[in-house]
Amino acid sequence: MAAYSFLTRKALGATIVALPLLTWGLWAQKFYDDDPVQKEPPPLNAEKVQGRVLSDYYDFFLNTFGKPGARHPQGKPIPAQAVNTLGEVPDSAWYTNRHAKVRLSIPELVGGPSDENAPAASGLVTVVSAKTAGVMPGFRMEDSRGHRYFVKFDPLQNPEMATAADIISSKFFHALGYNVPPTYLFNLCTERMRVAPDATIVDARGKRRPMTGRDVTGILLDVPRGRDGCHRAVASLQVEGKPLGEFHYHGTRNDDPNDIVPHEQRRDLRGLRVFCAWLGHDDSRAINTLDTLVEENGVRFVRHHLIDFGATLGSDSNWPNSPRSGNGYWFAWKPAAVEFFTLGLAVPSWARVKYPHIPAAGRFEAQAFDPEKWMPFYPSAAFDNCLPDDAFWAAKQVMAFSDEEIRAIVKTGGYTDSRAEQWIADCLITRRDKIGKTYFTKVLPLDRFAIEDNRLVFDDLAVKYKLIASRDYTVQWSQFDNATEKKTPLPPETTLTLPRQMQATDDVQYFAADIQAGDKQKTVTVYVRKKAGRVEVVGVDRTW
Image (cartoon, rainbow, N blue to C red; front, side, top):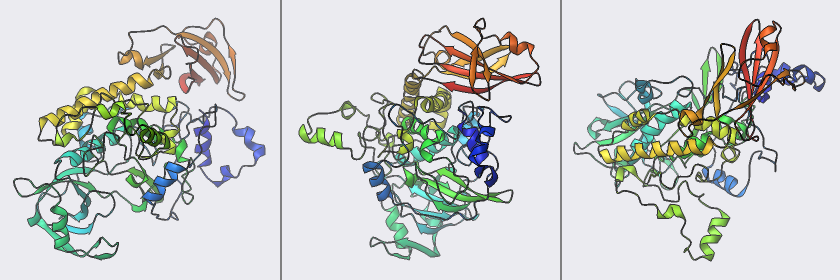
């Protein structure tokens, strides 16, 4: 789609934003010289952006009983934005292309955002404040090197469950392209701990007061203790920059000049729905996000993060997930009415799933998992707007993880019960395959287009991943007018070989190949440009 190209140019500065409508024709073309854009342009200075605190209760009621953000009108889907002309998401302060684009090695995958900043193994650990947000006990600490971390634990009845989920999911989300804090397993021993003189805690009455050693002891009484007397924990490194609070899954920040795409229309947030379904991250709400103000090359801008993955992979942080999690919202009128009028006798299929008794694995499964029916805790405008091409973009990234890579990342969870490691990895592999089978049928799943020896080549992901054996394609080339977006068919040109007109010309020209594979509703149109003797793929459109 060309939407990203224009939005990118809007972000370049006030001059373009202020262009009068009369000059629109100067910009009304499908492709520009820099297409396809691989990285957003340098950000504008956002030094005036202000911190904010979003109410979790307000977010719940707003999204449960309202419909914030722009939704698809009946029969008129809103195309994703913040995409380039190939339908890919460029690198930005929101997202960085990683494993699906340039494969990470297994050491890089298991290392996550950084494997160099784990808490110091010796020296004092200083508690600087208690963790009051969320449901799991914890606190902020500083190690002997001065690095600060958010520390969280497991519930007593499910040792290793939440900490393993946090470690594993943070590495998957990093490999998938999101900004996440480096997170480490950490053995916390009380003899190494002290409380900072200025440490504070918010008590049960909501009042902030000085924190004492007794408060730390009270937190640790509710978490498992190992045979060595120490406590297994996860330590998430404090991310770079000044904390600004959470982001919404709809709208924009009006104090951030770089935040010009409504969040519900961002492909990296629409497609996030598929990633959260895969990893069982139904706690994917605003409270588990964080914006920070960072500085690079003298420019201050907002970077957007996903944080806190203790409620994934069958964990609900302080207890195992409810079987309802991922299968229904916290509240919805229709299911509530069905339960009321049937006196609870209408038992859904997900409620009949049998889970193995593996405390560290919580309640995670793949048998009843249906990617299309999966739901977060409550509605999300970005997730609700996820279209087949958004889901395809995400599904091909999930499918990029091999069995070996999945098992290597799961191993970093540090399970002492080998059954938990095996179960979580097996479920992720099965759920991955279900995602591929589901979303590779919604569109014609052709990808990685290139020109080789005067031929258009591509991968059919359904064939690549052995979802089908093979198939035949029909091709129709057209000459494409970049100014008017008019296509003029070239009847003889019906193979993947570049049209003779394109091979013969030295002028800047565009051509388009419409590709089908039996279903006329599912078409992939590939746009090819010849310029200075070089032929390249510059655009991809999909219909379904």
